[in-house]
Structure formats: structure tokens, C-alpha cells
Image (cartoon, rainbow, N blue to C red):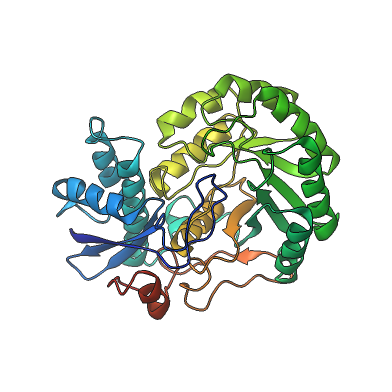
Length: 377
């Protein structure tokens, strides 16, 4: 089965706010769908955390390398693409684009063999997983009301991030966290992401350590992105001295970038993003490396329905993974999925056991948000 063509289509019109200092607008494109077509009529879906113009440019560059390649060998084909990009952009938008190709190739392999991706990647350790509702921080009263609405949808774990947190003073930070804990109650899990990868993040180690102590008082499950993405030594110190687990890694790409962080014990929880790290092939290897170093693996998932489907397959194939991230309120997750996503009575999300990613997209919703692009659904 050969790769015949790869197409991409950017999602626009309902792009959710990202919490960034240079805030996203609804028509901005930061998520791009990918479709891989084969000569035998089997197609696969992928997702990329990158603007569609950059993805298309990457596909143009990669096309001579993937055309007529074996679509049933995702790891080898993806590694071929990575290896040939050392001089042209490993770690940037090209790597992000390869991530989407890799996800789509695993989808094809699953469809061709009649197996779920999770089964092919090592087996199904679980049939459901805890999704944590991921939403931006706001002023305390607005955040409280938002959390109450999300809790009413059935979620039992919540991550709040970015917004005013770490950008005003310690009193504001604590007021936000106190409001969140009061809204969800003591029986739900609360995670906090500072957004240290935001442009020109100015808080350092001492702020992070003091904040970690405050968060522990509110029984926060983990503290995410407390420092700038390259502050390896400070992350090591923070993990050693903070009274709660420290997580991060969402902006790192490829396993080689994660290795020094895992070896240095910089994280208690590592969070690669499948739509930019190199795809399912790369993320599985990072998860295995994390296990070898006693670090928990939780996929970062501020992306699309296809990214969520890939995260669910990883969550079943990696033994110690207890959570997946669920970006709430995004049509790119909820609307474009045929039938939507359903939580059970325990607030858990079933992991599809159908061939491939187990995902079917709503063609009308995809057409709406891609301005009519033709993709296999």
C-alpha cells in the first residue's frame, strides 16, 4: 500500500483563545488537519499544531520523500522524514507537519489490519481514561462560573492555566486558585498551568517555588509550565523542592530534546504534544523513556478531535497514563466529531476500539471550519 498524496486543511472561524500575550483571533489558524491518501483507497487522518501555510510548505518540501512510500510502516517512514530534515528545520514546523503524517499513517495501518492504534502500539491497558477539562484562567468570579458550567457536563478533573496567573501579584494568583477549588469542590482534581512558554515570561525559580507552596495548600495535582521552556537547571531544582508534582515539556519536539530533561529528573510528569512532537511514533518512545526514568506520561492536548483521538490511543497503550487533556468549548474537538464525545457517569472517556484512531469526522462541520476543503471523513 503506497502513499499517493497528502493534503492539509487549516481550521478557522472558531479558534479558541490560547491565553497568549498576543491573543488568538477566531480566524487565526493554529491547527491543521492532514489526510494521507493511498493507492488502495485507504486514507488516514492526522492533526498538526501549526498554521496551514507552514504545513503546506512543509508538505511541498517533504513530498519527494514520502510519495510512493509504504503507508503501512509509519515509524520507518516518519524516521526517514526526520532524518532528511536535519538541515532544513528539525524541531519546527516541519517536525510538526511530520507529526500529522505519522498520526495519519498509524490510522491507515489500523484500518488496513482491522486493529485499533492502541492495540498496534503495544496493547490496551485500559478501556477508558480520565479526561481533564482544560480552560483558561479568568477573574475569580468569572472562572468560578465557567468551572461550574464545565463540571455540570460531567468532568471530574480540571486544569486552569494562563490568563492573569503569574502576571499581576501573588494575591491574584491565590484568589484565582481558591475560587477554582471552591467551585469544583474537594472531590475533584485541580491542575494549574502557569504558561511559562508565553512570550517574554518573566517569573523565575523563586516565584515558581513560592507559588508551588501556595498551590499545595489547595491540593493541586500538578503545577505545569512554571518556568520558561529552556530553564532546565531551575526545573530540576523546582522538582526537588516543590511540595507538589511538576510537569512540562509541551513545547519540546522529538525524543532527543526530551532525553536530557528526563535524565536530569526535571519533571515529575512529562507532557509531549502528539501534534508537534513527531507524532505517535515519537511520543510512544518518549513515554517509554519517561517510564525508564520514573516519570509519569500525560499527553498534552490543546488541539483537535484528531489529536484527542491520538491521545486516547496513547493512553491505552502506555501502562501508567491516567489522564488525557480535553480542551473544553472548542468546536474543533466537539463539533467536528461525528456524534461528539460522551463522558460516562464517573466522568471518564471511553477509548475507541475501532480500527485505526477510531474517529469519524462530521463532514459538514469540517467543511464549515476549513472553508470547504475536501478531506476523507
